Image (cartoon, rainbow, N blue to C red; front, side, top):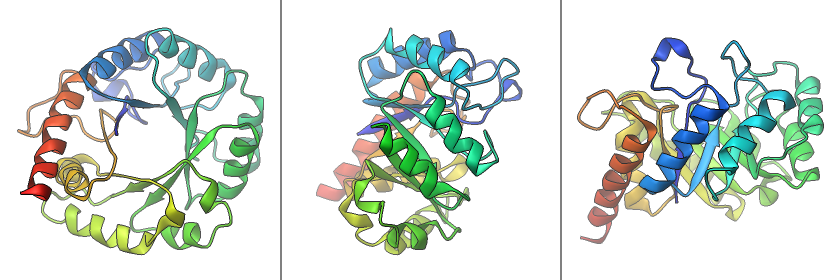
Length: 244
């Protein structure tokens, strides 16, 4: 599986290529699925362009995307969008239109409560396990671990020459990951090395403007669709190395 991460916490300062409105996110999603993405991760935005968990932003975003594509759509529950853990749970409970899944960063305060609230509503949980945090240890010990949809192994090392090593360390810390599927991805300079590693290991991965603004050759990406197309080529090259 190759998921597209449409926008992340990026904003207008990252350029007009980053989709911020429901309509632009939906247009991007349509292009991304046509390019080969099979799952969508999106950050709904407030009118001023900031990440939000408000149902007034979530509902139109999900509705716009689902009008254009027929693949699972997930959202963030990152603490930067709602710092108060109690309020974050209440936001989840207030949603009027439900995503197919939502990511929960396991190192954040209130992560298990947020995950429980999502599961109670029938929403799949993507357990975000960031490298260089205690998330892996907390997740391995969590009673909710066997119930999550998948694990997002998120490599924060942005150096192209060390990100792969950091990815191996993170996967080691996760161990069996409660037997759940693992989606491995990197960020910024580490994006492409980690994506190729995911291909070699036969793991799911993701690509999109949340993780990088650049194509493998260092050129600025013109769209998420362009990143997805390049990502599939890079992912396959990793798989080819695995079987050669």
